[in-house]
Structure formats: structure tokens, C-alpha cells
Image (cartoon, rainbow, N blue to C red; front, side, top):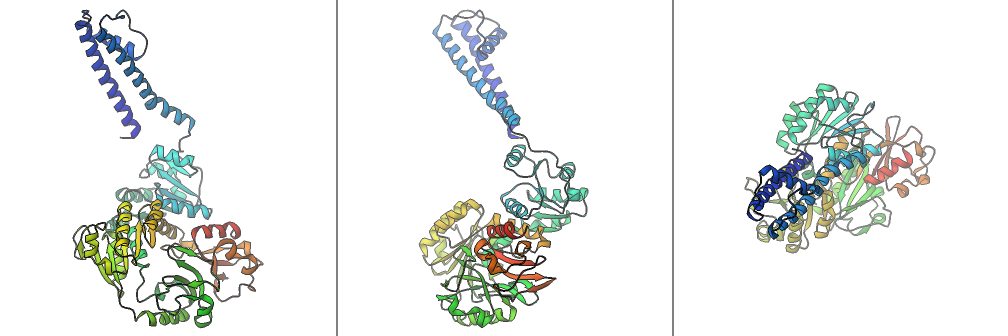
Length: 545
């Protein structure tokens, strides 16, 4: 039952009950205290007159103090009922009259994306759509929520996303993709309804329970995404292991050019030195695209940038050179003893993190509230005794993958107190809790909403080469007509946008070796850029239009 309907029912029930009580009390009072017995309907009439402030007829005045007190109470009760009625009926009516409701249909569209239901992760997708000038329709079933989104500037349509009529109103027949982001069972129903309207449109469905993915595919979903599993793998990627760079997991740009991450481990040839001193370009042909330091990523690097232990570099180069870099760093790191990693929380995220780390030399220990074959200690991550039992005091990394952010914040505080040198990698369910987790002592926090949104974006933009979505930095291929006739140095791309241009695509060929001060871009060139979301948006604003 809708909130407005519930409030109406509750008010009417209150009105009937209050009227009945006062009618009975007034009828008894007139007979007992005033010695003027009367029919019950006459008492009902007087109560209604009192509630509506229209008078008391022939009964007033009363001689007994009890009846005068009862009349005063009835007056206050009547005023309360009138004010409540205004809140239940008049205020919503005025709000609807003054605030336009969300539309139930949209105009002609072609190639747009239909997003079924608004969530924090679809906000990330919508930001990507807006940045690329792509049209979308957000279908929201809750009228109040739809109106709020409409007033906030979203392109929203009010209606049930499971309804064929509503999907038809959202122009699914000409859409390029449909994203279903409601409950698991509703998403499957949406997929079935979508194919009734347009059998050829691509349907992307998200699942909270990864075991249900096959049923979504049976319902017609072309792509089924499990955000929690990807988040687990993303968190596992923040755990430094003996293999600090995996070339095979880099992002391909050309046939022999790749991106990869290199972790600066304690004791490695890079630790504590300046970029100018380690001479990555001269020795390995590798270009530093950006630097992660703690939880932040920056492309604002120069030759004087120092690389303390724990820094992660995003580097670009030929496969052979990056392999040599991997071997050079692995030679030092391999002398270290295997790291002990504690995984707290063994849901979908924790399972995925464990699977990702199972092939490394890390020693893994799992803590969860429920027993399982893979759970080493059964207990609460907020309990110091449970953390001690799982080996937190000897661990070098903890992957905190519990669902409740409040519990994660407290568990972070406890773990940091037990092991001040521990690297704590945390999953966050809500974006607004990320700063609190950092203040609690987390070294790296990844938001479920951000990862989910980036997954959606990477799926929807298959033709636009959004190459990396499980990091806080994107690698995107875009046209850049605004750079035509100039060099990267002349345009000061990195200084103006924070993005690093790692390759230029000209007539289908990837050009990775070029001098930023002399290489002139042409109008038809595409560029492959790396940067944070807001940096890429700024690049598009300046150079892609």
C-alpha cells in the first residue's frame, strides 16, 4: 500500500474512533452530570458540531464542570483533526498542484539508454551518459520519487518498468540498451517485458545474488553483472603480493602496447627514489601515466616526483619492456616472506577477493559470522578477540568486505588499534560513508555504487572503449577535434585537464611512441586518455566537441 493511501486510511480510522468515543462520553455525561438524557444520534450531532466549530445547538450552556471540561477537550480534539486533515489531504494536493509530476511518456528518441529504477549506481551511469551527450530515460515506479528526480533535472518517466505499456512509452523500441537495476526478481521480469517490446535491444541486468545470474539470462538478459564479485576482485587488487605487476591483466591499447600497474614495494629499486633517477623510459620504455598514493590518484607527476614504498604506478609501454620491469621488481620482492592477508566477511565480495588472491603467495585467513569450509574463524569483525584469533596482529593486509558500513567503520577502528602497521582495504556500500572509513583508518576504500556504475558504463559504452572500470581511474578512447593542429605540449592537456594521453589512434593504427612537443594531432584522430572521472569530463568539455 502506498504511503499516501496508508495515511488516508489511518486518518479515517482515527476520525471514526475519536468521534465514537466522544459521542459515547457525551451521551453518558448528559444523562449522568446534566440529568438530561438524549438519543445517541443527538449526541453525535453535538460532537460533530464541536469538531467542525459550528456551535453546540440547544445543549449549551452546561451546568456541571465535568461537561464543560468535556466540551473543551472536544474543541481541542476537533482542532487537531482539522490540522491533521490539512496535512493528509490539503498539503499533498497543494504540493502536486505547485510541483509538476513526472511525465508518463517521452518524445521521439533514438539510440538512447533506458534505465529501470534509480539507484546510487545508476547515478554513476547517468553521469557517464551526460558526459558523452547520450540521451537516456529513467523509469521510476514510485510517483513521489519520480517527481523528486524530475525536479532535480533527471530525464525521468513515471511508471512500472515491468509494464509493456510503460516500456513502450520509454521508447524501448528505438533504444540502444536497457539497464535493469531493481530487485533481482523484478529485473528478470523487466528483461522479459523488454523483449516483448523490442526483441533486438540489448538488456543489461544487475544481480545482488550471483547464483541467480543464469535465470536472468534465461529471461533474456544479454549481460548479467554481479557488482559484489567485481568489487571483491577490485579490493584484492589492492593487496601487494610477491607478483606486483601482471602484464596479462593490463589493458590492451594496441597489439604490442599495454597498460599495467606496478606496486613500489619496500626494498625495491624504485622505493624512495625520484622518477628521474629510476629512468623507467630509458631502461624499460615505460611511461608513467599516473600515481596512486594511498587512496588518491594523480596524473600530475613530473621527474622530481618521489616514489615512497606503497605507491602504485600506472605505466604504459610495450609488452616486452613491461615484462622486463616486472622481472626487475619481482627479483627484489621475491626475497620478502609471504604476506598474511585477513579477509573479514565471506559474502560474494569476500569470496571473490579470496579467489583472486588464492593464486598468489599470500597466506589467507577468513573471518565470518557464519561457518563455512573456507572460514577459518567464526566471529564478528568488530570483536577484538575474533580479530586476534584470525591473526590480525601478524597480518600485513586486511580486506574488510562486510556489507554494513557502520560495522565496517567500527571494525576498521578495532583493527587499526590492534595492528597500527596494517594495510586496511575496505568495501563501502554507500558513497557517503567513504570519508568516514578513511578517517577511521582505512588505507583504501572502494564504493560498491561506484564499481557497479562503472561496470554498467563499461557495458553500455562497448563501442566507446571504456577500457577500465574497476579502478578509480578510467582509460577511455575519445575523439578530440579540439586538439587538431596542435601538439599535446602546446595544448597543455595534462595541465588543463589532469588527463594523460597515452596513445593516438590514426586511421585505425595505434601510435604509442610520439614526442608530445612535436607530434601534431589531426582532426580525425582519436586519443586514448587516462584520468579520474572528473578529469575525463573536463577533457571532453574542452577537446571532444
